[in-house]
Length: 430
Ligand SMILES: Cc1cc2nc3c(=O)[nH]c(=O)nc-3n(C[C@H](O)[C@H](O)[C@H](O)COP(=O)(O)OP(=O)(O)OC[C@H]3O[C@@H](n4cnc5c(N)ncnc54)[C@H](O)[C@@H]3O)c2cc1C
Image 1: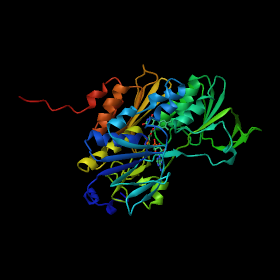
Image 2: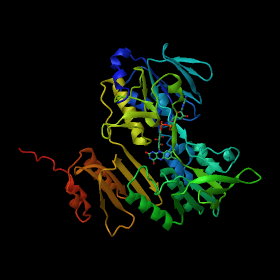
Image 3: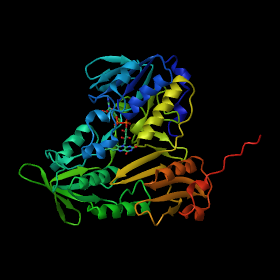
Image 4: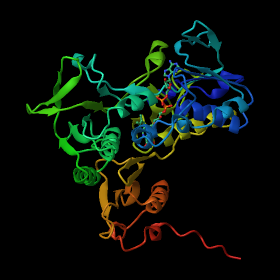
């Protein structure tokens, strides 16, 4: 907890008549709604630089990119909800500075907005590829906002050649959608395996095989060394470090996120690859919180600090801050979980694995594209990756939440029902 000892109790803020939220994405929108759901009666102002009500980003690399969803269906809540909840919403407006001494924020149209409590939900932007050759190319894309997906989608036509740089969730999901649209796909990943940062080698190997079966050319252990551009300044080739060139019509770069910490940093808050918060999600200023992709919080489980990029994390952190502002402060200790859709499969992940954990694989030979990986620490289940078995995922979540101690052989035996490993509820005696 790098900043914890600087924090005081929320009581020191005094009466919270006005909560200002910077950022109207998943986390900002969830906080505004959670405050009202918990009967917060003060003013709520949400300032968002995108000209949109809060919308879901997860379909941007899945159903929305495939073309099956209208833009309006991305909205997390109907517009009407914000009016009903009496949330003052400054749309298409950016906060350019925080004046902590006078407790107000300055908007890009010159207005000031005072706050009692400020919540930073500023998310992040795609990490960009540092190559000037890309500056003028109109066929190279990142994926964070709906406009990015709209623009990329126009290039995903049958027979087009797509190069995906980055074998994380977004790159793999886009590769799967592109194959569904008849696009030729090559995926380049610098690490020796896909999803190297987030899953076990077993799960990485499984997804590499599936993408290969689906016709994606997967090149792990390969770095991009440069881009070739044509007379129209568009990228025509991606040159790898082994000297080979991938001829390409369109590129998608998915190499991670840069958290939007500039505002916090300029205001003198503690920042280190994210805005540093304590276990109550408070920054180094007692009146300012941070939530969602931008917040780096102390993780009880791993003993270090984490910044998570997931919808459950946004929603649960928003609820935690709403509870703090309306009742009692509880430490934020939610168990992280995540999902990814690729082809006809759903990968669901719960908990945080450590390199020293024992890995147990549970595989039903009759179900080709479904299996589970569990991580055990002293035989306690501390994380799991489940492919295409929502029922097993529901049980895995309980095993991880309760840190159930299991017999690794029983866990690996796919013939024995997973639910049998859950502790029995005490029988009620009458
Ligand atoms: C393509 C894609 C697929 C994904 N798939 C999944 C998935 O399957 N499952 C899952 O759990 N998660 C998924 N995620 C991650 C998930 O969408 C994010 O974790 C979540 O949207 C982050 O929300 P946020 O509110 O923290 O940040 P953001 O969504 O980045 O929102 C922050 C908002 O703040 C605004 N802002 C920033 N600075 C300012 C300022 N100074 N003034 C005013 N406004 C400002 C930004 O414009 C933005 O609108 C996916 C993300 C992407 C991009």
